Picture 1: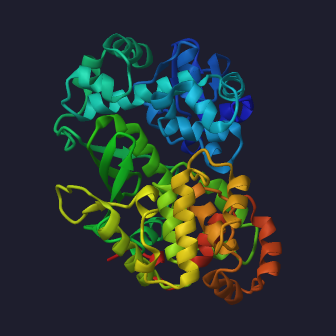
Picture 2: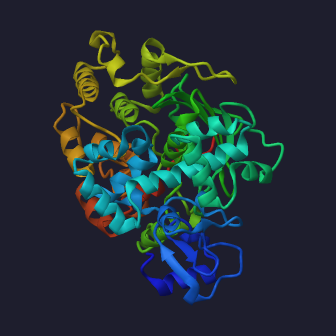
Picture 3: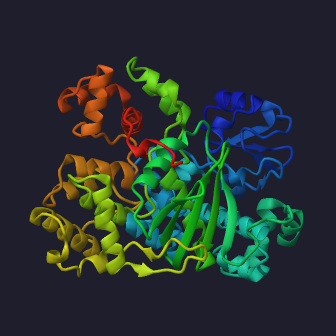
Length: 489
């Protein structure tokens, strides 16, 4: 979008928050960059430069605005709706791969050369993988500086910097303030001021309807791993350097997030996975406008706009749970999963009580005796085949997954039909166009609305909803009285 100068100028002059994260405005006369909705008086159009990423702004020598804090704007929705090289690379960078494995590790996961990855990112985003990871480290550092009393040396290494000097130089360059000055400007009395526990706000593009989003997560919560308590969804997290516990509470203009981390180096990864689970980088206006073009779907959208797709923090975990949920009720699927958690999950210490385990890793589940599973023999075969392939790396599910290739690989597994593959594509891989025409709830909703109810005819009708059919699924599901569609009381 940043190359459409006229559209960008109009967005900045109207302070349109819908475009936050789509592009950034660099002001040549002041040397700062802002989000489109910055409350300051808009500069003259001839003094604006539009760049596709915060990293590109920083690389061009611009500093972050202290009023609108562009580093805290929602991420670009582009990376959630595409499965090409650049989108997959951006999802991996957000997941901290560059910090842990370097650019060669990023390229190896994507199956391209380092040079090709750098060239593609530079062409589309104006910055290479190192600069993009550096911008992410700067944002993590600011969050730690402002919300914890950690010594600056601990902040530097927790944010992923290799040295104190690099940390100091980066913070000064990006924010035009020293780390000490940033901390002095932060509001006092922040409730996250304990080591390892952070309180922060996760921004999103309005509108956001929390009913089906949190309703789905709460209704399908696995005891010991997830829970709904006091108006908040809580769950354990398996992270690269340890484990964590997150509490997510829906608010009118943000999601309140409280993180307890075993290792603060996992901060950016934990935030990225929580945003992905709640689909917070989606563009609901664009999605809903497309779905409203169908006159039978439009009333559902108008009644409760801004529905998101409830996703996951662990793709392999969700695939296992999808198999456990085949042809059984939500309650039965939770029971099967809870038994696996109790027997094979890793215990964790929850300071608030209620959560007891991490969901078992595929390596632990690969050693499960099939005869101990209370399910039909064919589904046991499906379960054991899946966890073995996940443990061996023959099936890879993650932010770097190639959607068509992964679908084909899953369909080759015994017991995997279109419904299972599509629900994994929708909720684990994040494909916004995944569709479930054979789902019983979808067929019932279609029949009630006057839409075609046979899978083939409904798929043909849904072509007009592309590329947002996964969101259409949420609106169709919402016509039922199932608990997944409502916030728990």
